[in-house]
Length: 480
Image (tube, rainbow, N blue to C red; front, side):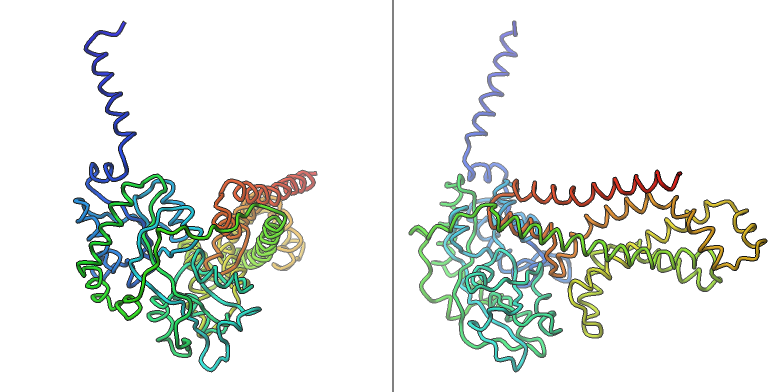
């Protein structure tokens, strides 16, 4: 039996646990002393960004601080990728989502949404002199951000948008001629697109939308408190003062605000159907073709680098070694950004070509070290015997060394190809819609990550497993 005192202590612990579990979201915030709010610094000025001193600033930072002050706590920012803003909120990573979160029927169904704190208009940007207008976009390449009101508008017009992760990149692509137009909120267009040389923003408001604060469906008490605090900020003029400070107050903010008490139209339920399956197969095809072409480039360039490092004169060996160290020592994501965006003024590559070159150049450095190790692993007598037979260096490499080195290099080459197959997912940052990007789009569209995730994993396995078996078969044949 448990003694009386321990039993009493156990009962107290269980009671406290039950009280904590039953506490409302507002009580948990006050007990913690912090209001956690999620956003993405990559969204940049004026939302939430770091100033020259590394301090987090922005109009949403000021709004979060004001809301927290009214709740009697302090605000703490939680960094999250913008595409994961709603899923991370639903997971419970933070209390509220506030980072240009737009009022849409889908979000109204999934979340509790506050009254709007900013009204915006969709702005269409085209190249200067272009005759394109909003209703001329069908069949055109139009850039925007995923999970936005602009994305929904374009899909409604029958346009399949080109999706970007950041706010500046689509306008850079517009100037470079890679896309025909960009549709984004005026708060973004006015800062990042319209001032760029060669970009023309269409005069007049497009569709009007609203930024709201999102909370989980079960957090009704927190929703009531946040919405009331936001209402007080509007009545007392504090919200206007914040927007004015960040040069955001305009006549649009004086207009009538959408009433969220009325039910929004329910979005059409979507499921993982034949159409989605076909899109996934297309994404898998892009991934496979991209990986094969990139690895072919990596093998050729890697072979040249390996031979240069082993047999080349000192300057050539030094240059090859520098290439290997630079490309191995920097992230492939950075290399893709430099190749696609930074070099756009002098080298205008389409996204797929840039992806092939970026992955190929990066993996060439790793292949070079594999081939170099295989060549150095061969007995020195092989080279001496070939020289005694009168073979030139090129003939010795072709007929004696490379065939033997290939057998040694085959297992790590197979591993590298499988790794490249998976690393190809990073090319979505330069607008290539491969398999992983297709999965994330479907996950958001369907509000379901399990089925798209399983389908994505199955397709990756279906592409990589046969390759592994083929490599094992080749190894056995080479041994014989």
